[in-house]
Image 1 (cartoon, helix red, strand yellow):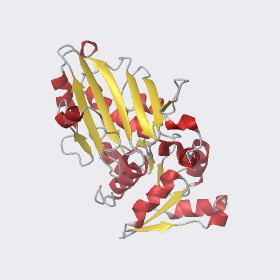
Image 2 (spheres, one colour):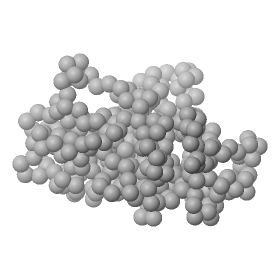
Image 3 (spheres, one colour):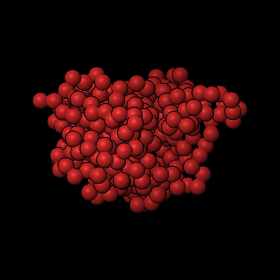
Image 4 (cartoon, rainbow, N blue to C red):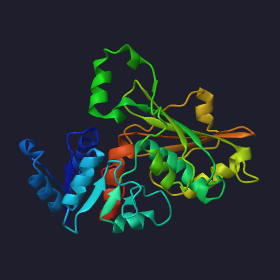
Length: 313
């Protein structure tokens, strides 16, 4: 049996990439809105309610408005905006989050797609909080470096025009310490203190890496680099799209530099633990347009529909 899908906001970076994924699928009929009706609320509502799965690739306010248009109880919404990621009646679209998360995604008609930085951060910290190695009250710091595609069409145009000298070097942002991903980073790790998060955008198209430095003395008594690595490896054992690399990954240390873009064009997350006898550096990399956005949305759709989780990915 085939399924129908509609992308509300199909002209944006995430929407376009979802269309690319769905174009490969014989089991999905993509419903499309005529260009002249893109802002026609009645036509959008018709297509939203006609779809088995509707992706919302819209700003937060518009995503809330679109969600309110859906009256068909059979329509599953997958929202790529920030609007619903911490609401209790929306399921967080990260199948690897915790035991039972896939079943929650399968049963729900309201799925909130994770943010790109947040996905990497949560995948690093949630298993360690659950295992009791990282205290929930620990003030955690995190840094992230990302390609410019995460900034959307306007930022992509700025970088590709190549006319602004300031864009040639990495640019830290989120300097108000209120990045929009922080609430979900807390809500879905179990941390009770907001992490101090410092993102950096740089002059490459896509790829993302989040780093979390930890002092072993801040962790549960007896914690070691080995116990941290074992907890992560155990949590993701058998996961199709999460790969825990060897402790102090020899290949990376031999080169001496971390490749932020090594997961590009995949739906994979690579997790690393670097360490000495006092400190641990956790790192996770992903494609910010893949597992960090559109790929994650399609993965959640697959889980919800009960088809092969990796279909089209």
